[in-house]
Length: 130
Image (cartoon, rainbow, N blue to C red; front, side, top):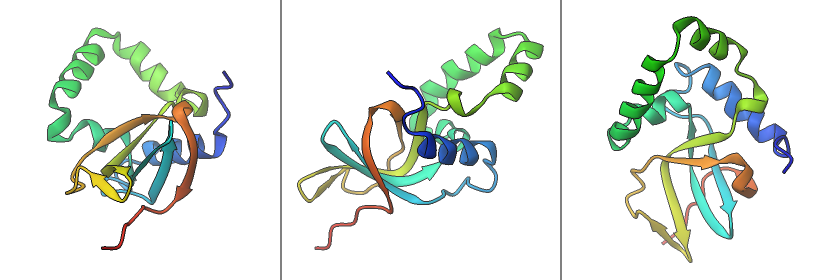
């Protein structure tokens, strides 16, 4: 599978992740088609995603993994992290859409989506008028 098939999307996610302070409250809204399911939300850096209460267990394992790595190796890996290493985008206020119904209905959800699973996307959140 061509890992760079979504270069523009990877570049956007990479830029947001490299500047987590600027984008901590979110960047642009985006709507994704993933396996025929619509997902919509606001792009956020990985750092914002992993620090959410709903990601407490995920953060714990991430911290354990980071603590087990050699600090020099971890710093070098962080410095060399590039566009080709950007595999997931992260969303806040994320919803799946089934017909015209958002799930969860309140939209207070964070989500991680593998970039290679995205069939199509457009900038802007999906909003269904009632």
